[in-house]
Each structure stands twice: as C-alpha cells, then as structure tokens.
Image (spheres, rainbow, N blue to C red):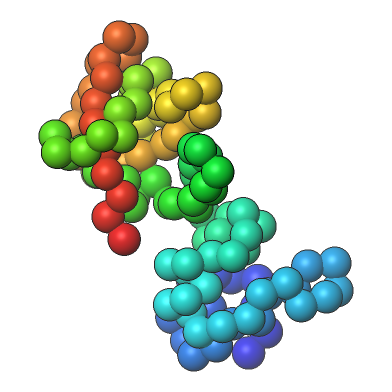
Length: 120
C-alpha cells in the first residue's frame, strides 16, 4: 500500500518504507518505526515530537509518552498550558529546550516546575 495517511500506515501495514527526496530514509515494522524512530523526520510524520538533548544524547519522544512523576530527576518549567478537550498540552522548558507533554490537568505557568519521565 502506498499512502500519505499515517493512520492508515499504522493500522493496515506490517512494514513501513519512508521516502525522503525520492530515496529510502527508513524501513521497518510499524512498531519499530513509530516507537523507535531513527530521525526527527521519521518521527514527525506521525505527529508532534520532542527532540530532547542532554549531555551527548538525543532522544525523540512524542508528547503523550511523557508523564508527571515525583520519582524522576528530569525537571522542567511549565511555560504554558493549552486546553485540548480531553487533555492539556503543556509547553515546558528544559535547559533552553521547548518540550511538549500531554496531561489530564491544568498546570499553572511560571516558576512551576514539574518532574517528568518517559513512558514508552
């Protein structure tokens, strides 16, 4: 199947081939391509994505994969909360990087730090 609809890709495909500029950019099963993207480009095809950089590492995570956790060392400052119906999209700051996460409660902005963890 050839499609530009990522919902179709995840629902009906066993394997995914991602093309960029007419060349193969990535290839694998749907689970691997979605959950362990090899590039920001591949991840962004499935929606908003955060690229979190610290020390010498870079990690690609979707906003719904981040959750509030008191037992984490990963602390962010809340910048803004956007009501999205069933949840809030939280814009936060981590060492100068903008990170988005989805939560089920309104968080006030400014000088409000929260600890988050990745739930993959």
